[in-house]
Image 1 (cartoon, helix red, strand yellow):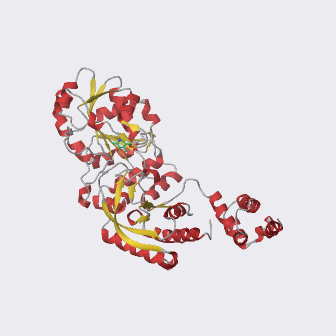
Image 2: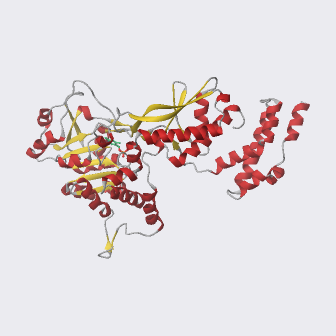
Image 3: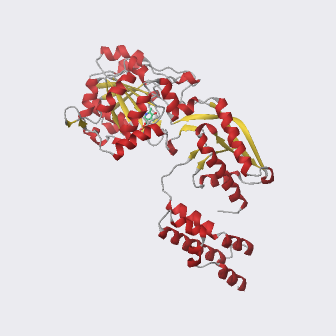
Length: 478
Ligand SMILES: *Cc1c(COP(=O)(O)O)cnc(C)c1O
């Protein structure tokens, strides 16, 4: 009991801590209230721990000496945004949970210009009267894809719903059973169909659908033929599906619109970079698909959006649908999308400047150099051997993500960390709790940091994060 009393006495008073240099340096950058609250909370926690006899005496003294730092960490956490940047060490390029596609600085400059100023968002500068929100992007999308007309909504799920609701409400839409997919986050073709008011007419079987399945299902209630790109899975083996080219004569014969949900919406042929061929929007238009929908933030590499491109007669109907107002995009999206699409006028430019494409096309030499650079930064800060740690540069595979090219494994270089006697999961957690959280992958007792999804200017953050992690494992810090 006396021992505990002494420990209580060692805890500095709030006023004393407010005079501490570390604490004072915090005051400039954040509200005083946050600092004072953090001091109180940290002191309360310490008292509680002493009361509960949770730690050994030396440990408590160590924590008391380290109190200003603990307060600093707590205050920074309190003051930080809840939605904040993270470092993607997973190697999954289009990772839906951590923001899908990145926007380049150049594209962001355009967003800022539009956001901090008034703009001609819905104003026709030539005529001096009300204009159309979608007109700014129409020409660009038409030029790149070869479609007649285009519009943009909140995301691809909204695009599909709008298309079906506009063209097939109360009528039948014929889809192959093999294409009735679910995309993560509760987007299921049959459910979207139901929500739109269209009636799903599933034809064929899971593995095989033939052209005559489609033809046999056509009747006076049929409003459209639909194809869905099964972007996130593959059926292998005894399979056959009906292509858009094969459906073309059928839709002509019965005068029905052919619609296609492409999902990932790639605009350049990825096989150029040794990736599996992913159908481009241009291909679908060329094959006679009347309406194509795709995401803005998957392989296109822009902001979240759903793009609808195709025949003007159908898009005109969609523009009159009240859902269009509900799904409308804001000026941030429009300006980011325009700046991204502008890069596609020159394909090489697009690949160089759009982060998603740049990451996917990055060669192994560049990745190896980056891995070496990170390796050297790590051994500068951490005495690997004395930590009982094994640090290596290893070959591994990155993934496209975003439900695109699910089987594609892209060769990459990773930093691999394993321990003789420490818990690798604890390091993974520490990295996630770093000031700038670092998301990594644990596989078979080793931690992997994939260099493909980390930029050169982020390497120092990763190295510092690892030092933080190793210190945490030693119990120096929380
Ligand atoms: C991703 C995807 C969607 C949903 O797109 P969001 O932009 O996420 O709404 C719909 N259909 C397919 C085929 C997809 O791959």
